[in-house]
Amino acid sequence: MATGNESKLNELIELYDLQTTYFKSALDGISDADRHNRLNTKANHIAWLAGSAVEQRYEMARQFGQSEKQQGNELFKDNKGIQDNETYPTLETYRADWDRISPILRDALVNATDEQLAVKIEMGPDVTYTVKEIIAFSSYREANIIGQIALWRRLLGYEGMKYM
Image (cartoon, rainbow, N blue to C red; front, side, top):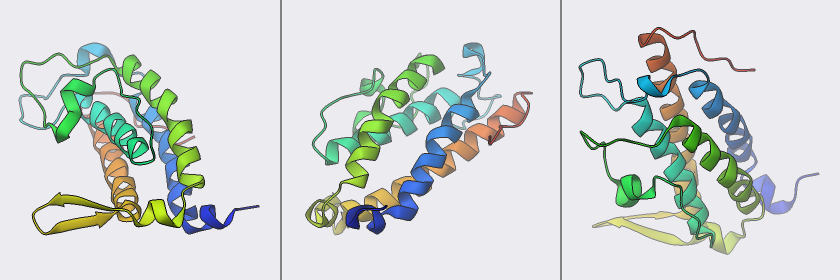
């Protein structure tokens, strides 16, 4: 039975649960040698995409009072973009960090209060979002990142991502 708070975010929590699994599936079988492969483009490589998604979950958890950081935090904090000539953590490192933060953040989402969801965060000049709006955007962005990694899989010659 859903709690009152869970019902406010129920659809987002359902997506969260799917994306928790899909993220790991998208990374499944990709070699660490391919994690930096950009196929001679300026596109974000898999290592940056994966680390950015992990950082986003840690950042959301910090909105609910958590203080943990992913192992690659320095590469992503303050919304850093991809950095050329930087060696990013292994995909296994990202998986471990993802597995560590996902249940913590899920619990925070399920138990979020109206007050927590209504907190306003300044995102720039004349740009303010509530925590609930940021959660919704983050869900969209996470799905987008998983899709980009799935595309990279095919471009790099891997089989398609499994959804089960």
